[in-house]
Image 1 (tube, rainbow, N blue to C red):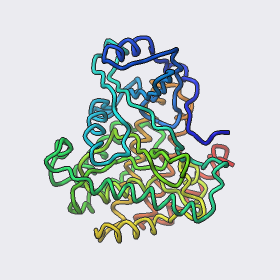
Image 2: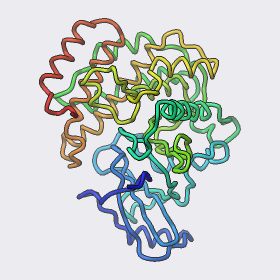
Image 3: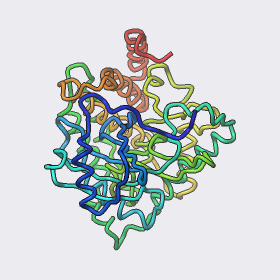
Image 4: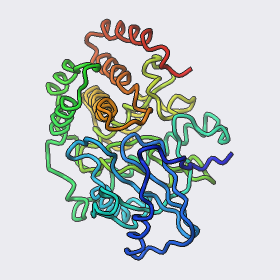
Length: 373
């Protein structure tokens, strides 16, 4: 079995009008030869991602999902232009080919880029890699270093400078995600009232301003097949912006599930951070701060914000499933994940710890059949 990441069958209801896309691409001067093979990636829970394989070209098409979307979400033009602007300074972004903003083609904006062939480390590393503890640690450090490199990209005087809105990034984020959660709530998820109020009461000044990815995960990086601890690509730039790097790190750690975490939180794991050799969340923060020279007087704020933000993202996706705007069965139990993230946020704050533990036990028992073995 190859360790190279490949796409699968196109999901029902998410078929792509490849003839229309092909005609449009050719009109843009893209040389396409042979019969196209269309497949779809299952890893993304938000935008739809397709592979278009020709005899002379291997392409990736990204488009937004159908259904209700947050006003600023799924902006294909923005994602395309961010990667175009980053290419000169951060060579692990994919090569952009063409952007379409003519909805008469397939009914929405989309863009096409060259595919980077490699390994995408998802919830479990391919068994064929057979990494030892040292190699796992090397992979972990390399992924963190790529985030640090991004945070050093010179943006002033470039197209990237247009991404920013000035000082006050932390406050804008807390207020923005708070509003998004309120709009996406369904009857079967917690209000997050205590967490939301705590975040508003503990907003720090921005530590600095830099280019941030805003969705940093292992399954958004591509590894070199010939040297699989090395990162050769970084994907999913939809939420990239200018902002506080500690907010970026806090958001990244929301996905960082350790082997010692409780069973409910482990059910949310989508990257191999549970392996021996991986840094713990605490070690990641210490490593990052030491290497960048930044300080975090109230690190809990950044980590709680990351948890809440992830809960909002998951809830926005679940909202579409709840209202039958998508039938993707992957989203069916996202509401349980919202509860798990709520419990973790309460425990990080340190207050209501007993209640949080009781909630954890309650949901572990109630939703035991949903947990992975």
